[in-house]
Image (cartoon, rainbow, N blue to C red; front, top):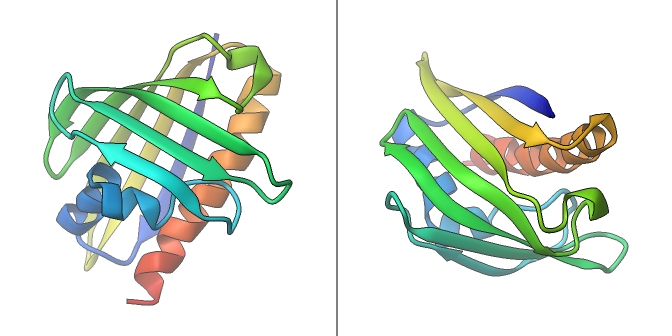
Length: 146
């Protein structure tokens, strides 16, 4: 098993970033690696609550990720399970991994530390790194424009 860790600085307070991570409207604004639309975003942000996000990529394919919230400590920490309902990294289909997001105030903004753990191998890690890098670039741009 392997993990992926990404760190991003976002020009918004942790509470605002937290809302972008835990509301359907927020998720719809940034999820997915490419500049394609989120097709469906359902979020029940409570421990044990489920989420489901379907998005399209530049190649025209649709992907759907889902899971449940494992930890919620607003506005500093979020953990959830992650699995593909369809699409995504083929090696990961049917497997469950774990996402942890920590938000730390940095001046007027937030430092976001993202960990995607329990990935199958280095190829899956590289695939997820490309996807999450694109998604977090959109999240950074979303608040840079505000």
